[in-house]
Image (cartoon, rainbow, N blue to C red; front, side, top):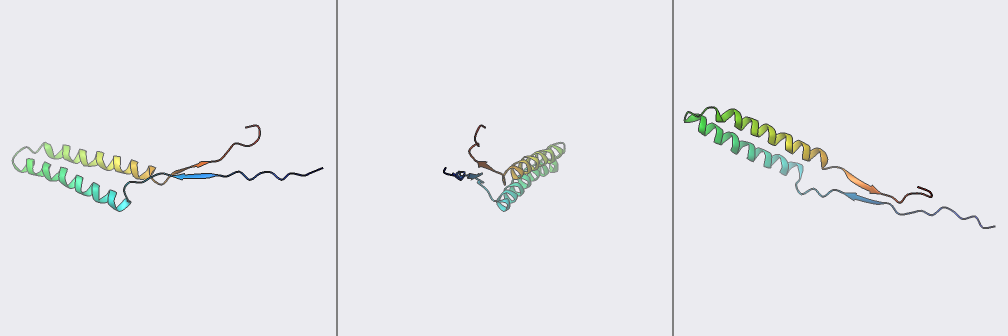
Length: 86
């Protein structure tokens, strides 16, 4: 009688592609938020002061979106074949 050892099946790991580094993400956020708040400050300086709170809301929404992207970035997938009977 021959005793067969179980086969070792390959496992594939796939990482997510990150198109921007954390430093680049922070730089992009800083530039976009500064532009939005700067434009809001310019409007506030000429008397349209109600634009400034909305510029702050825009910067906060942008920060929330960037945090969501940054939290999702480090993950990946592990693909392994199912065992016998699965």
